[in-house]
Length: 225
Picture 1 (cartoon, helix red, strand yellow):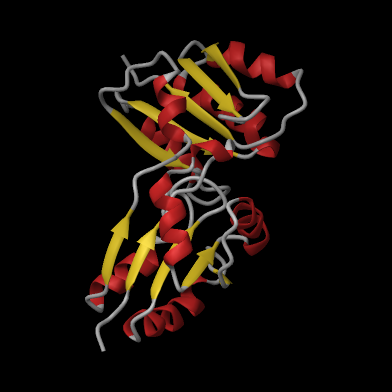
Picture 2: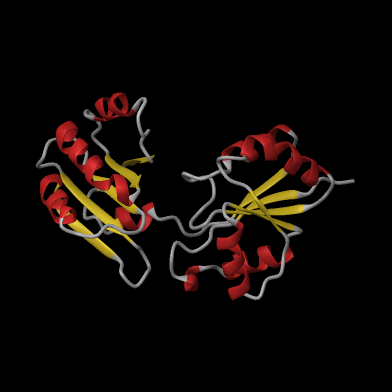
C-alpha cells in the first residue's frame, strides 16, 4: 500500500474570512485532522460545514502521539495538521511530526497562509528586509542568556508573548536593548479590536501598563544600530 501524506494547513489568526479555498478543500478531503485544540478546530470546521474526525495533537502530547500518526500515514491515510490559529509548526507542534515523516519517506505538503508575525512585522515601520523570528522566549531557564545574546543583533527581532507576561518582557527588553530602542507591539490582528502601538520600548511599556491586556501579542524590536 502506498503511504499517505501529511498536509500542514494554516488557519485564520482571527478573521475567518482569511482562510484559503485550498485550505477548505484539503480539510474536506483529509481522512483525519490533527488539531492543537479539538474544541477550537471544531468551531472552525462547523463554520465551513466540514465533518471530519479530529485528534488532539499539541506540544504536550506530540512525543507520545507521533508514532501512532506515522502508522496511520504509512497505512495510506491523508492527514491534515492545524493549530488553533496560523501556520502549524510556528511556535506550535509540527516539527517533530514533519521530521518523522521525512525519516519514513512520507510525503509532506505545507499550504501557504496566515501567520501572525508577518503582518505585525510589515506594519511595524521597522526594517523588514532582514529579520529574525524568536517566537516565545524561555520562561525561566535560558531567558537571560538568550536576551544577552540578542543585545548585538542588528536585524529586526520578532517575539510572541502572552498577556500576563507582556509587561515583564517589555521591562526586560528595556534593560537588555535600551529604553529608547524602537518597537512595535500588535495584538488581536485581523480581529475587531486589532491594535498596534509604536514608539520606544519605554513609551510602549507605559502605554500597556494602563491597559487591560488580552489576546496574543507580537513584539517587533528594532535591531542594534
